[in-house]
Image (cartoon, rainbow, N blue to C red; front, side, top):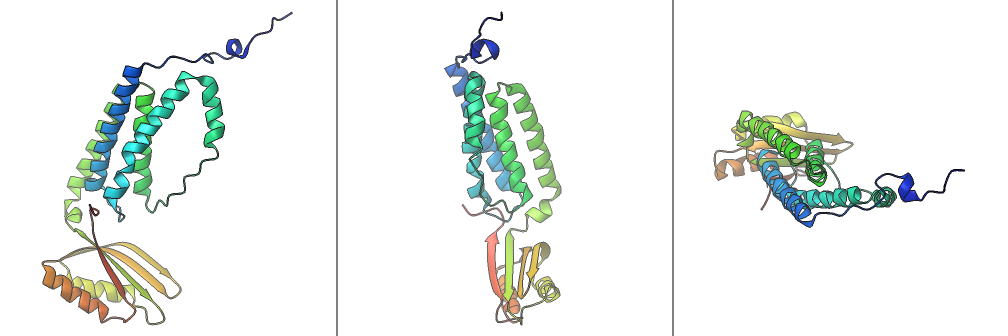
Length: 228
């Protein structure tokens, strides 16, 4: 007859493991430092049209929270099984407008995962290589980064402007022009451009030229690296 065994005997690792407070504090601080560096890289190397400074502030909290979760999970296997069910009710509902934002979020999570699993060397090595690639990519596209204004044009109604007219008008007013986004649905047109102007007077003339295309035209300018 097989003797009755407890759950702790049947499941290896079910016995809680004591967490080293010093190691945990070190990994938590390292997660904060690496995610802070990731945020700076996102601000200066990212190409998202959203407010990058505001979005980058989430990286530190995300990495440190992930590190805490991994430490708790690996210290108690039984708790980790319950955590799976608890996290199943959590839904990430923040709007991710561009794939680049999702990539940086995954990297912030990976920092917390690596340090929480005590893989410091691998985490630092991978983080250094990835950041090096990002900065190299930035240097290869420096001209685009110098275009420090994002121009968003919205036109609605039966008299909405055509994309061809917008591009032709902007070419005459700007020193550099790159279209980043274009949406057209029904009587709505919305386009975003990376633009560069010689001076404020040129910007004003360009704005007035755009307004002459249609009375329904709405224009907004945003600094490309995000507002502080």
